[in-house]
Length: 359
Image (cartoon, rainbow, N blue to C red; front, side, top):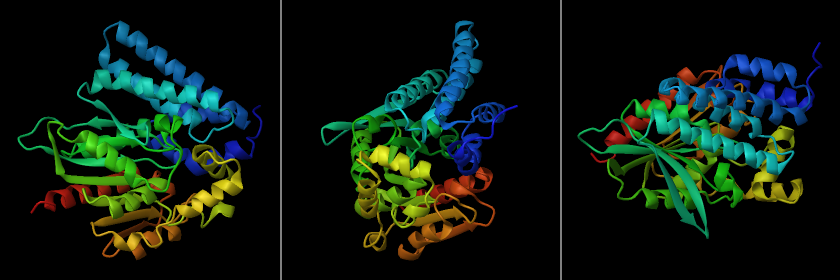
């Protein structure tokens, strides 16, 4: 008989179960791991073991020449390694190891499934921000580009299924690890002025064949919903932006925020403690910023969001002039329990705005 999960395991299940499934974790894996991991200290090892099994299946299939099976299994390994450590900051060294495994597995998958995918590294303040560029099948006209921006604990390795929604509509995607995110976070902590990372990767993308950089949009999830609006205010190359479940002010609901989220923010901000982290979170506000956004802006969330309350996200829509607001009554955080609603909505909206950008 399994033990009841401790508070952190239960919080991860309650807050993010739909997210894991919507982004490619097999439901059977989710059930097995969460049923057998009653203590938070067990979470990373249990998920890494599951990811290792998928990686082994992938390598076996590749060696046998079954490349489609290998690519799919590498993708499962990548996202499973990612969720082993997404809010798990108990041991930074093991967190980093899982991050590196996720990165490596995704590149093994893309080498098979999308060999045209390209890694971009852009210099920023003596370090590098990293992004993955994927392009739709060649067309007569260069493709519009959508920068996909993660949140506090998401990374570019989580975005494969979301990328496909834009790619099928003829848009290229650039999934970004900015400061404090994924492998970029090894050298750079969270910073409020995320536009510097967006500007850096746009500079790096300049001149790449098949891209129309006069039609660039950006879409962000969770804390990325803050980042994307902040970027729009300062980066005129962005022609349209969409944010899903973003905070207007990262510090506004700090005390009621899930403890795992606060711990993760402390870790990725490089703060010494929660008090210092809260000071940084208070700098991550769209007050005095949102009203300067002139681009078309879509703001989406769910009324059942337990991580960023829906009315905190609505503050963004209220402050950005002419923004479009969508509230799903049945949506949880990032509406990951209804991805079939929000993902087509965002992609179709972005396609329409970018097609109109040069008219």
